[in-house]
Image (cartoon, rainbow, N blue to C red; front, side, top):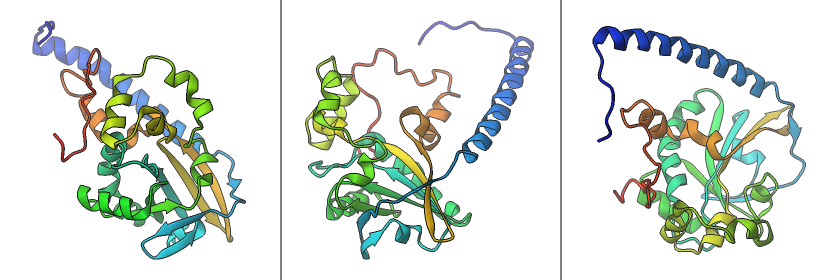
Length: 241
């Protein structure tokens, strides 16, 4: 354990009060950003995307399932993956129980991947999830919004020193590093208004942290995330700890 300063309750309370003021300011800034996010222009989705589902082939519009809003998590599970990305799996652990609450607010939440539907559903069963998971027909849906990368685009990254998390997660998915990182994680949001579908928001990388609840909790634990200097990436699928 690292050394850490020790203080009195009074000293702790004084610093906690100062921190609380900053936390409240951050909350207000977050509220303002959420409003700014909602004010982004809506972009019409003009391409006809198709998806394989448990109920047959469907269009993007069909995926709304009678609601006006749709959130799609782009899950890293490529055509040759043997199992889903461990990080995406940890995010799905958070998404799964929240889907029912989102439905109550007119939002359909599902996951989309390029892997075969049979593999996706088998992995979903293993993980104990119940959310809808669709397989894209072709690559355009993920590629068009930046969640699928070509070998040429990845060449500078792959020629450098790969982070341990990349090689570890690639091995966990049963593929090489290039195949693993060709897929990208992300969240995209849509609304259907007067029969027209619009894309309203896209995010990736640390923008996905709201769906990584464990990081918010670790940030409040005494040691924090404590990832610096780790030779092995700590995060695993929930049935592999």
